[in-house]
Length: 153
Ligand code: FES
Image (cartoon, rainbow, N blue to C red; front, side, top):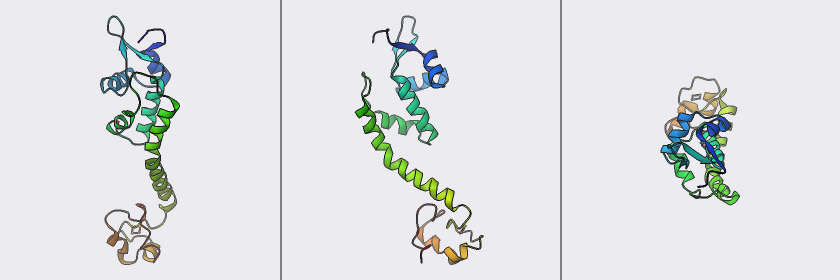
């Protein structure tokens, strides 16, 4: 790695809004690559800014570092990922994100009515979930989890 286009951990922290300690942690976990200058200072390619940004967004979306690391393992090591590399990574997340979006939309739209949780506390529960019929579908708030079969009877 030549030092010409490399940035320090402080510059990477400033650009990404991430703490230096978090970046060291990502680096130690091999989520991001670095080289070492004389004296041991970590130096990063500028493309690492994008990787760190991806990690931050994925964490905000609720993914664990293990899940993120697993997904990022598909990115090439030793070279800057291309648009195609990022597209492949994004395809892995798409169906999972679509499922989360659907759940969040359902949560947003359903919280003031019956969610099929078994409490039968709302007046509308007796219409949609008579005698806790949703319990036959399994545990938890069945309607929020996507079960509609009892609701539509
Ligand atoms: S809200 Fe709990 S069963 Fe309807």
